Length: 132
Image (cartoon, rainbow, N blue to C red; front, top):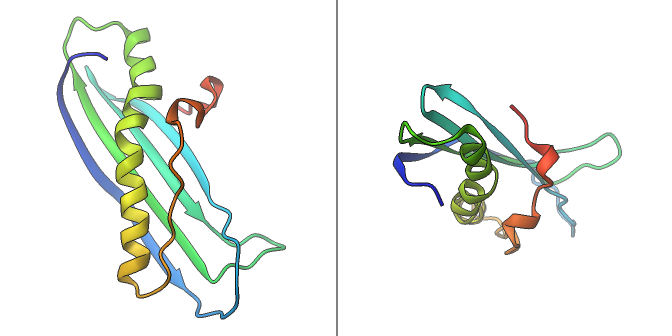
């Protein structure tokens, strides 16, 4: 783990659209990761959780929760080390916040809570899925 100067975690998007459709549904969610550079020595990692309708599937809920960490590193850190940190360690830090936010959002809306499973975040994304 790299020594970091500062980390700011924020919710960059929070949406819940309840369509009040009754029945039993299996929600298929998608989690994406984005990383990038904001300024000199300042980078971000964002986890994006979405449950959205598709052409053949209509869900009773549409949910979007984006959790973002803005991270400032010390000057002497190597770009390759920073990229590895953003792809692995930052995801490890953000994932519990994402799980908690999704569960609380649905519970506070007085609907059955959506619970994201606990997973090994090192296996959540393939290394080549990083988006800049």
